[in-house]
Amino acid sequence: MADLAGWLPWLFVGALACFGLGWMAARVDIKQLIQESRAMPRAYFRGLNFLMNEEPDKAVEAFIDVSKAHPEAVELQFALGSLLRRRGEADRAIKIHQELMERSGLDAALRNTAALELARDFQKAGLLDHADEVLDGLLPKLAPESGLRREALVLLKDISVQAREWDHAVEAARLLLREFLPGDARLQAELAQFHCERAEDLKSKDPAAAERELDAALAANPACMRANMLRGDWHAADGRHAQALEAWRAIEAQDAQGMGLVAARMMQSWRALGQADAGVAELTRLQDRAPGLDVMKALLVFTRDTAGPDAALELARAQLKRHPTLVGLDRVYESQVNTQDDGEELALQKKVVHEHAEKLAMYLCSECGFKSRQHFWHCPACGQWESMPPRLTAELDTAGRHLFHATANAAPQAAP
Image 1 (cartoon, helix red, strand yellow):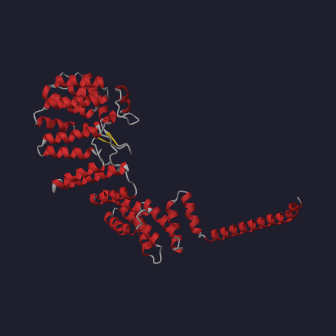
Image 2 (image 1 turned 90 degrees about the horizontal axis):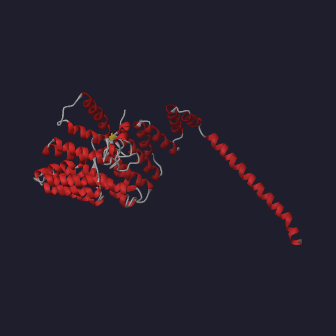
Image 3 (image 1 turned 45 degrees about the horizontal axis):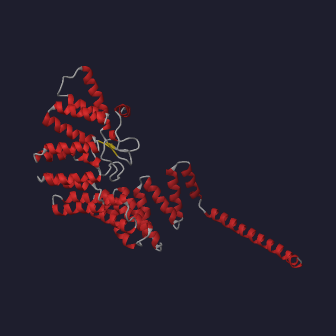
């Protein structure tokens, strides 16, 4: 106890010293903060105030004043360039980023960042060749695993798609898969689509090379229905209908619902081979396994053309009972056209049902909700690949599953 009592005064002094040092450090920090805030130009705070008050035009002008007076504020100039680009003033953003790239003494990392931003500016301005040139010069300078290189490759891929430069798109996608996103399913699907685009470009000039591109598409993404669809189309166009049917049949293993996209073409090839009955049997089996309105339509058209309208009407009624939809009811009415005279009431029913069914007979992008009567592999609205399922909206429930609506539920959803 005596030893502890002897140490108490020193402990008290030590505590006072720590308190004093902490107080002095706080004063120094506060003083430095006040000095730095005073050093900030008023135009900077004025710009922030304009942004908070949703006056972006005035904010931009205030930040421009700051950047002119303080050219060393590089980060502020990056922010200003991005703001101008988002506002659609790509020409002013280009000027800012070009000046940064040309500035002597600028750190290499900042210069590379400026080059990437400049490529984005050119893309926004629609100067895709300029953007591509900037990226070609930038990519060799970037470290293999750097975040900036990943951003540059993604931008190169997107620009190549816009410019329909499929060679560059393929190369960018391959580098992204190898260096940053191995096994990424979405990117593999995109790469397969790029190969399909390249195949279509090559078809008339080099058919053998086009076939190799389809092989590459399936290697990148074995579920690429488009590759098998194109191969079947090319075989059919050359009169090789047995090979065409074989290629189209491969789609069933990828996505049975996708067979609706080729059902009508398959019937034409079966007719050409004199095997119409076999075609009806196969599509009927497919309709039983994976009901689809496009397959049903192909069956109805073929039955009407070969067996007559009465047979088509019977088939339509049977399918409607099994899979009741408003579009299916419209198919029944279509089949009735040549079987009986329409009374005024029946004609009105047909008209109303047809108008509402037309609104449901659409393909829907799962990413942005874009609707189209034509199926697209690349959504024209949001630019996503393979975002449009090969099913009509009448076949999709609100959760996106492959189910059919009951007719009573389908009609209100189609109302304007």
